[in-house]
Figure 1 (cartoon, helix red, strand yellow):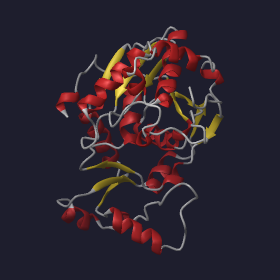
Figure 2: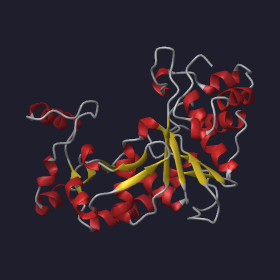
Figure 3: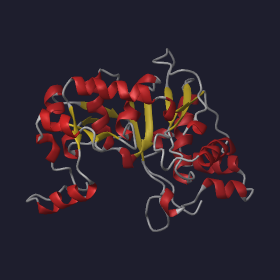
Amino acid sequence: MAGLRRDGPSPCGRRSVAMITRFAPSPTGGLHLGHGWSAILAHDAARAAGGRFILRIEDIDGTRSRAEHVDDILADLAWLGLSWDALFFQSARLADYQAALDRLRAMDLVYPCFCTRAEIAREVAASLSAPHAGAGALYPGTCRHLSAAERAARLGEPHAWRLDMAAATARTGPLSWQDGFAGSVAAAPAQHGDVVLARKDAPASYHLAATVDDAAMGVSDVIRGVDLFGATDIHRLLQALLGLPVPRYHHHALITDGAGRRLAKRDGAARLGERRRRGEDGQALAATLRGFGPLAAATKAPTLPL
């Protein structure tokens, strides 16, 4: 994905500014209204605090990321009247994710998993305990029990690297994080099971890359949709394991359609690019979204049509 690498300044670490926020889209499709609202909330919070707003393109999924989607993201945000102080591409930061994975490996907190998705599904179906409602199937830990010799002998096979959740949580003990709407939250990463941190076709998972990047870029406030609330448990665990700073979190409500369903790329829902190409006024749309209030009021979200 070399064509997607248009790097800004080097990651800056923490700076003596009031706030650093970020918007971090994946170039796997067009932005929709929900993305636009989230970007506006993060942008305006930083500007109001005299801080910095970072745009980070999360393009490490080499099979789905497209250069034309990057172009659309940049055009859509500019059309809304947003500006950013730094632009980063995850595809240029793979060495940082590998270094973090190596540290976890050195602590004996990750293990190679050779199971296919079909094999995992069969084991879950045959297990006596059902996964938590709405949480999806948890990995049953098959490869966690392989001996060191068995793992070494199979490393030439396709595999993923999973976090040994029991070992990781035992190492850190209880953790918590702060949300601007929910207050103090007791982290519960164990409910997610042994999450994947890297695969052959994805050198870092969303969880690992986002956690490493937020720390490296000095992000003080993570502003994102409430659909990622649960993911923060995993991010908080990785921060503790890797000795990374803990930002403040703000998980805002999601824009929904007339039926109350959240917008999604796969539905082609309310795409900004289509509205931009029709000649609509982006800054007028941004003003409409701002009319629902600043970040502090984002526990309720607008609904379509907008």
